[in-house]
Length: 87
Image 1 (cartoon, rainbow, N blue to C red):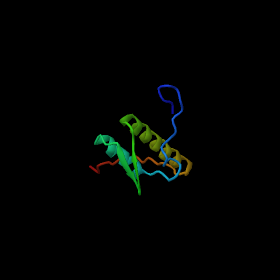
Image 2: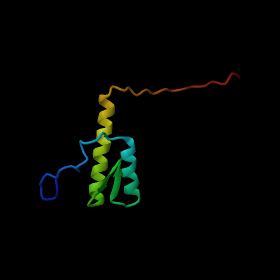
Image 3: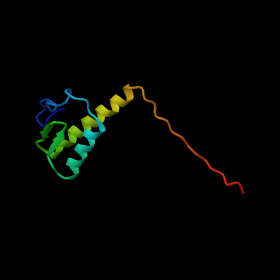
Image 4: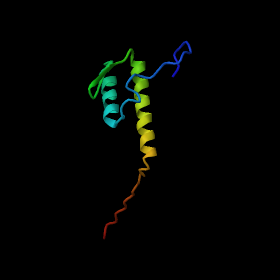
């Protein structure tokens, strides 16, 4: 990530320390929806400096979850059902 002045900004302290889940993403979404800057992750409470930083954290968590799902080898299946009336 880059700040406005071009200096690299380090990710939040909890990044890389814990596995990220859909629950964490949901908590970030709830904070964004309520305009809150604090989010509870397990026993850790994180206070973001701005909504922009919170949105950046949300994007990071979403990307990590997507990458984990891809690398786990879980296949996504799509089924289409067609029904016919017996008239």
